[in-house]
Length: 451
Image (cartoon, rainbow, N blue to C red; front, side, top):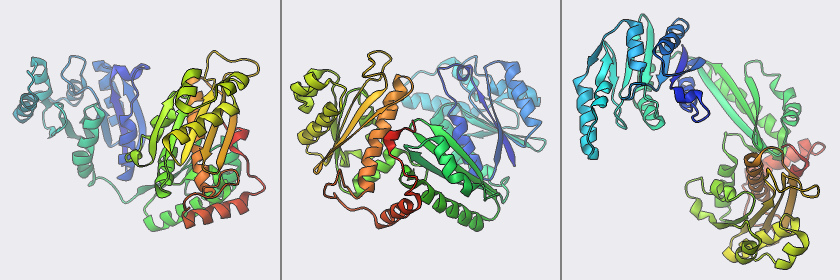
């Protein structure tokens, strides 16, 4: 079965809003064995909405739309689809009762405009929205299926999972999408391609995509197949070969974020971390605490832009600031060591740099960042000049800081020849050793670029 997704809303045609619903819908439809062939974003104009649905219904068997089901005059999806299919809009008393009860339960007065949400096309099956007032709608027309969902992501996700997916089960065929996502840090897109092209080009049944993202390269492996067992074996073989080819640059084979991987490493090793950030403004701390349960490993952090606060909060010696400057290896080390000492954490991270757009000099240009990682055995520091604008530089710096923590545990907790901290999972050690043997001639340092 093939499907198209239509996102309705003029706000999605501006820089202010991003259509994230289609990403969720694509993932869920693929899991059901339904191929998404096209996505369309259309503004709140009746003729444009009708035209989008008319064209989609001429191409595919399933059309799923998000948005345009609210109570205001610019919510036109119900009306446009009803007109296109030649159906009248009729009041659904059950929907009206649900809306009234929801407002009563919330202690609010229902506006008259909310009554529009109880008007549904004749013959439509109402999908109850337990998280909002706009019901979902399921319509069937001449062998085609149209599903209308509210644009609020929380409401859409619940409606699709609870009511749409079970109904689509009867349309799904035996073919399914089998998928793997690998991610690397500290490598360029061209380097990843050079290492793995000899591998993935030998598998004709797998579509391989290499995508560059901020601070990482993603490798997507996709295969549509009816043979679940055979396809899983093939993908696993590819993953194992790619893992060896990429070596230590690979940080996940399951599509995890770098902060999720670091969170697992810290938790598994019963280690803690604290941060002292200047140019990243707390971004590293934010990413470290994004994972639930982060209080187990994250003790805290400080954002110390001024020299006074670098001295007062992270014990950076004033003499070092005066002689070396705030953006220097010595200050990054002092930040990492000072915050570790102050908090009693296993590891301390210090970041200082020039995120721009101003403030750079020929000696210390915009994008120059020093990052230090301090542990019981000592302190290591890396310096890189990142490209891009202010936000990109800040993200790159936080990514490198996270990768330094990952590398610390990857090497058994050794920091500059120090004593290992904690244990490294045996299977992970074996994979790394195998990768090192395979790629010893090609290994590169994260600091050498790839950004």
